[in-house]
Image (cartoon, rainbow, N blue to C red; front, side):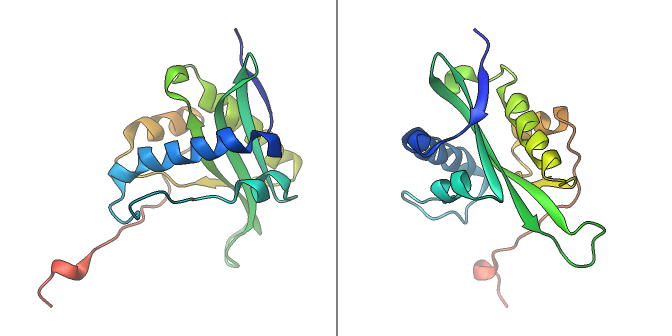
Length: 157
């Protein structure tokens, strides 16, 4: 059966909160700075209800199987564009991975951004998260900048 893509509603919050924990679980191996225990990345109700953001979900037979959001952000004053669309919360449930659902969600998010006259789209992905990078590259994204870090607690300074 073909998935349908729709805007999330507040009624979707319980499954979206579970998806958020799935995103965090998937990202923890790539980021030693994430706190242990249950944490939250997103204010999901705000993302759903704000005029400057939208959450989309994919569903099959009324079961939500994927998610993602776009948020309009003011960008740095020295760039050619004033605003960017920032994508996040990209999650596909385990049993539905590899079915191009991420691309369907991204397409809906990009259309939403375009309808809001936002043409510069950004997202963050961990350098070692090769499957995610490949999925974003398939959707047309290109690597742009690398964020580097250093934990100096063990350095003899």
